[in-house]
Image 1 (spheres, rainbow, N blue to C red):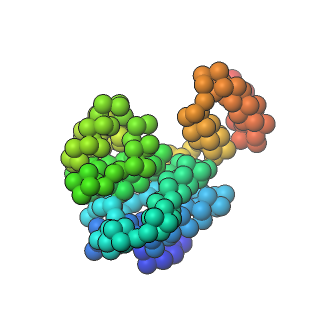
Image 2 (tube, rainbow, N blue to C red):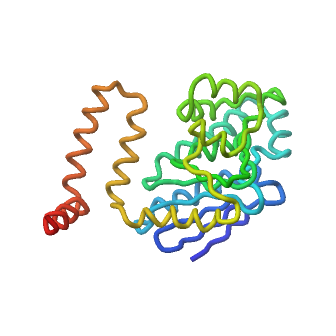
Length: 256
């Protein structure tokens, strides 16, 4: 099943929801319509109980090149209130990715720059083609990669994050892997097939267990060690009461 919303494509293939940024002529640059479309598509996937994983990609040669020229022109002339609304819209997209109950996997080919790089790193996992490029060039035009800073600091060391944010240089997929920004680097020729294989792996695990794991994983960000353990106790008990857990234990005992 597919649904085309011009700037965002949505396709459901079994347990995989595929969401694609669809502005290839603009290198899938972010604008108001694209951000709104992504939020709508993510909510749609989250509400479908059959979906086990979301794969987020870019149509054409690039994942996402950040804000487009029209968006930058709008920023330069907008009022404080308008800029605040615009920034909050992107913030809400980043937060929504964490709130989606199933894993959201970024499949990055070509460039993922500025807000586009932030979008990729905001996902739960990142698969990158070997020729992919990542970077935060905002400082070159006097802009600050402000919201993505919160994401980047949670993905790599403080020193390397500061370097990436303040020099504005691009890095390749292998370096991004070494920094912990991506999960896997896949060969360009086999990229789509390998992404499919990875996504289908979520069909073999418990949806409820993955959902609870994702929720607990991010809730622990602001917790002390003791509080995180206490929250883990609560989640442990909830997991024990799920149908998936009961059936899983039954299967295990039958094999024992």
